[in-house]
Structure formats: structure tokens, C-alpha cells
Length: 390
Image (cartoon, rainbow, N blue to C red; front, top):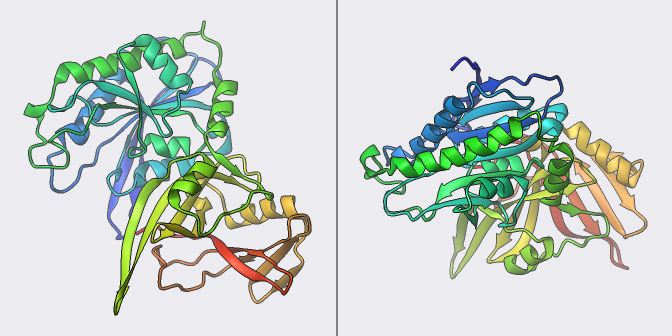
């Protein structure tokens, strides 16, 4: 097709390797807006992967061919991700590798995943919270038959968590093919796949037109609006139910892990959910994981490296909000908040925990304390943890 193609290497926590594939349609002007069109090319071991997700890759290639000779003042990136099935790790690797300049230029992302499977009914344009953004509005303008939906289980979530308006084009319902040996090419409706790709191509062609104004300002506004901002005055309600927590932060988390720990006569259930949250006035949301014990919030983990932050950058953000540290000893740095009576510590090493479900490499621990009249009592931890989630 004449595009510039590159491979981004990827290695998972067990040493297995793969690649993200990127083809780029260059813009006619410098510092151009960037539009992302994407799919994932991996499948689960139990399925042939025609619907999930050769259908999405086919739609991506169809769209790339349709746009091949279209003049553009917008850079278009056609991306195919690896390891979506194990937690969207390929797209997370990609978004974590973006520079701040690239994030600023990316105005939207359209993901193709599971299209035209027999047993499904129609095509949806989904966002992570069910609320429309400019990308979904444009797609529905091009194809009024597209209905709105909510979905977090695909790679568009990685872009939304990075402050980029993103949508998913997918079939209504996963159907009987989902993750099964019946997921073969004979079970696909090629016309439905082509219709979804036509909608994306029509939207992309309008975005690429020199007559279309830049979407950059609107994209930044909508990208930031999609992430909850944890301010110093906002309480963290440890011990609240997941329903109450999500109602408070205004976001539905993505389930990413579950486990049980049992003893004689007792069983504790642990569930972990992924949210988009901005901490310490960060411009880009940090990957935030809430762990619920028996349905109630027990711990929060930050993994800033998943969205491109380093430990030093996190410390700079804390100092910008709370000032100079009041203590530094034994690898821990502490800040006090005289306004809202909190004490925060940042540790270079993680503390061990029998409930820890993260990778084993070291990182930072951020603890939040509410000091009562009699002293300091820990009410919860916020941990920037380094390592792939298991």
C-alpha cells in the first residue's frame, strides 16, 4: 500500500515475545494532528480467532487501502496490537511509549474488534463510559445506523486512559463463537465487517481533509474529562463498596484480576479493577488499580510507568503539590499536608503483602495517612508498583 511500516518489540512477564505493527500515512504538514486506527492480531489458544480478531484486522486493512490515495493534513497511524487477550498489554506498551508531544497531537483512536460474527446483531460504537465523544459523534454522522454502547474490554481503553478520546467498533453481543473452536472464517458476515470499515474510512477521510479544522483542542478537553482527578481535598473512601466507589468517581472500572484466600472456616475474595485517574495534577492519567476485599475497597495501586511516568516524575508532581519533603530516612520520603491533615510517604521499595498480585520487581510505595488526634493511623495505601500485572 506504500505505507511506512515498523515493528515494536514486546515481551510479556513470562518471557514470551511478540510485536506491535505500525503503518503510517504521513501528513502534508508538520506538527499535524494524528488519528489512530487499530485492531489486535492475537487470539486465545482455544479459538482460531476469525471473529476475535481477524475480523478487526481485516477492517483495519480495508480502511488502510481505502485511505491510501486520500490527501491528508492529518497523520494516520494504522496499528495492530499483540497480547490484547491478556490485559491489552500490547496497546498499553504502545501508549506508554508515546512522547508527550505525540500524546498532544493524537486527536482520537478508533479500534476494530469482533465484527460480523454470526449470532451477533448489528454494530456498536462504544466508549469506555458510554458517553459520546467527538469520534463517536462523527462515526454516527457517517453511519446513523451505528448505535452507542459501553465497553472497556479492548485496546481503545489504553488510549482513553492516556487522555485520548477513543472508541471501539464492535458487533452487538459476542455471540456463540466467542473464544471457541467454532470461531472460523465461515462464521463471519463479511458485509457487516465491510460496513464498519466503510464508516471508519468515511470518518477518517473527513478528518484528513484540509477543509476540516484541527480537533486538537476538543480532543484534549474530552480526553481530560474522561479521567477522574484525585485532588488533595478529595477523600479516598476505603471500606466503601465498589458500587459506591464507582458512583463517587463517576467511572466504571475494568475487571483485571480476582483471587481467593481461604483458611479454616473463612474465605476472602479479592477483585481488582482498573480506572483512569489523574493524581497530583498529572496531565496524563496514571493507571490506577482498586482492590476490593469481599466487595469493599481495601487498597489502591498506581502504576505510573504504564502511561509513561517515571518515579522521579511522580516525586516532582508530589513536590509541586505538597512542597518540600518533611522527612527522608531509610529509603522513604515523607510530605505533610497541613491543610487537609494528611501525611504521605514515598518508598523506593515495595513492602511485602500476602495479598500482593503484582509482578515481583521493585518499585515505589506511596502511602496515605490520616492523622487522628492521638497520632498517625494508616487508612490505605496508594502504591506505584512496577512490573506486569499477573
